[in-house]
Length: 433
Ligand code: SAH
Ligand code: SF4
Ligand code: F3S
Image (cartoon, rainbow, N blue to C red):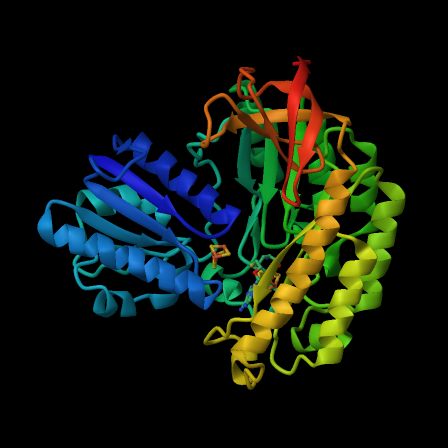
């Protein structure tokens, strides 16, 4: 049976799709990259904002229409929206074959062989960590590993803990074994994933210990991780990043808002002052560090002064880049009870003010790279032109290397010849590995 998976949402979902592909291929299914010849199409969905729901539902509806014409086709809804809809999915999406949340994938092969009568199956193990299930990773030189799943925080806007359950950490030894196996297979870079990697803890091993032990693995060139929650980011972690050469000098540290009032209402459990002190500590200890963030604009009750606090914070910190989002109310979360009182147009205005400011900062920061020679790990061939390669610097900047035929996985020195707010462009001077 040919299976095609469409993946939406965050890196955790990309990794989960690789887990599903790992499970299915070991059970004799063939994973394919396009939907044309698929017998099964699985859609791994996100539900973090309304927009994500709309997109997922529209894709599933199109697939169900296709299924009506080719009734051999099976269509499955996976991921966070699947978990949120549960039994509702059957009523909303008539003809859907399978509805599985993020903790139910272990049995997916059996379910596809024999489609159950009721499409939604609640997870038997709500603390599933998929330990010992090898993900099928096909993305060039860089691999993801979920070191923890779920989340014990209750940021008031956020649906993630409700769909991904309580936090659990995967045992360190098996994470380290998996990293070694991936390095033996030729992967140069590993990204550790968790909703809050800083609270990783398994048998007394904490996140800085796990990072330090991973960094000793031979031939592993780069270690990345995401996401760090500011309330759990320790000085020890900063020291480990500073000391170990193969731990990338990039920290994604979502601030969400620069206003203490809004941070409190968001239940983020840190203040602007604490966040700023972390930034100072990071900049003082890690040379050439890149800092990125997430920001939500238009949270219920956010005043113009609160919004200005966020703009001031962005200006002071000078992030390398930021993901900015309009607040989107999620049923079931704490903030859903609050009056979503910022008009849509005002949310959009605040959002663009923040993203315009950040874009100008990113543009200036990237311009500083003009003419410089930087080390780039080649991650893939460009989709736009097969003569160009895509890669990243250690600090996480995207680089387009033009007219270059180095293999994926090679590390090269690139002279920067052009920059935008998002990307560096350049030519390879030499391949060093
Ligand atoms: N666990 C991670 C990521 C959570 S989701 C973390 O704590 O950072 C990724 C981002 O989506 C969040 O950082 C937040 O900025 C944004 N987000 C989450 N819920 C949202 C909502 N209801 N409306 C708008 N943005 C939201
Ligand atoms: Fe959501 Fe907060 Fe958990 Fe991140 S830390 S997943 S924003 S509840
Ligand atoms: Fe990720 Fe979206 Fe789920 S952000 S954890 S795929 S709700």
